Length: 84
Ligand SMILES: [Zn+2]
Image 1: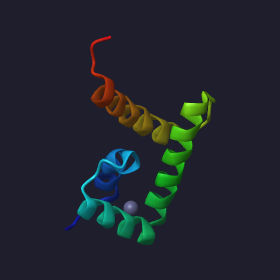
Image 2: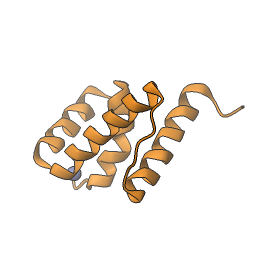
Image 3: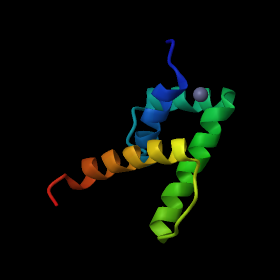
């Protein structure tokens, strides 16, 4: 398929929500099984979502933080709409 890690990362959003196409989900899981970067990313994401729910502040590398922020924002927008 020639997908890059970043393509997967942008899909991890839905993956974590469980709102992803089962085929794509399997594809992501296969990729994370082989790719340490993405595995770390998923772990960080899960951790971030968990900590956010608990209302804790966490420190992340700047690049990862930016990526997560935009992902979490779009996730939020998708769920609750943009009119607030
Ligand atoms: Zn990867």
